Amino acid sequence: MEDKIELSGPRLRLTNDLRLKYALQISRIANDPEIARRIGAHGFPNPYTEEDAKIFLDMNRKYGKTHFAIDFLIFSGELLVGIIGLKDIDYVDFKAHVGYWIGREHWNKGYATEALSLIVEYAKGVLGLKRLYTKVLDFNLPSLRVLMKNGFMVEGFERDTYKLEDGFHSMFCLGRQL
Image (cartoon, rainbow, N blue to C red; front, side):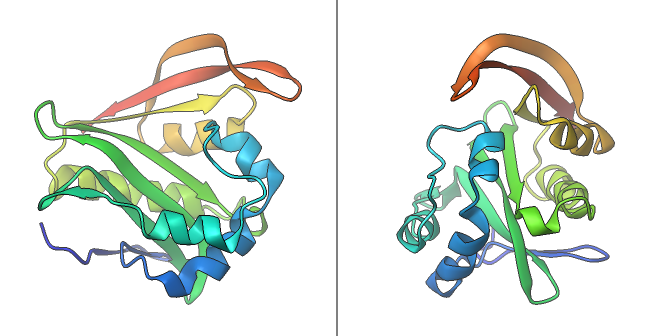
């Protein structure tokens, strides 16, 4: 597997070229409490600082030459609009977790749908994976629609499993065979 990966769609370019020069841009769009609330991961910082972005960009994603995670910056032209990635890449069972977020000012433009489509094709065609999976908070219906447009199906529901300031929330468990 090559180190630099570029994926292109009709409107987007995805790159795993995670240079520190993007830290300020990432922190500006990620520093939104609503992104942190919707992402369903307590480890997503809020506020999201430039230092947090540097830590993300500098994170280890390989064991030797094997990727266990691959993150991509999502660009529309030269504008950074979000991040998408695969983690817990399992080369024994040929599966991986997929996760993404888009900056609020870029919501409802189809960017997440297109980026996920590119990742699905990459996971299947290049990595040879057979399955992708993820979870979505019960109130994040736009993300649920993005996944379903890309062939993911609801496979389960975890009731009251995630605590936020307003109480416990449930999560949809989704998967897609490739």
